[in-house]
Figure 1 (cartoon, rainbow, N blue to C red):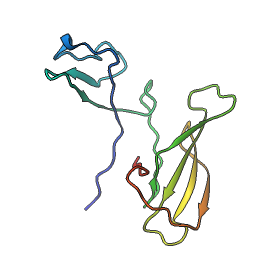
Figure 2 (cartoon, rainbow, N blue to C red):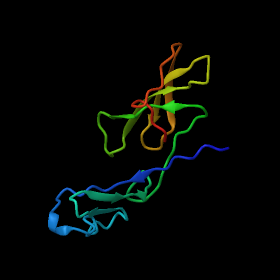
Figure 3 (tube, rainbow, N blue to C red):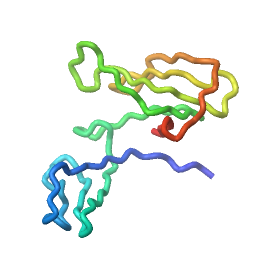
Length: 136
């Protein structure tokens, strides 16, 4: 049986909520999304995502994958004199719980296209935790 594949979803959160807008899509005026945010009768907002691309302007996506790898939540580090919003690197601790030798490493990815820039392997077991696990 094949494990389900993750998908990127994008939610759009309305910033200005008024109770009188019950049943209305609060983000319908935004031309760049098909996601919805509808005010319910009990005052909660029901969000429906869109399947998104990482570049929200042209809908292009990039993915980092490695067999048996569980990357942690990525941290973005901007280049000192960045000209673009994704000019920098992503840092992530990656654990490989099923691999006995070299079970963990610091992964450095080019933030523009997610190509691997470098990795620093460690000979220590880092436990997989719920908060630290990120499945792209």
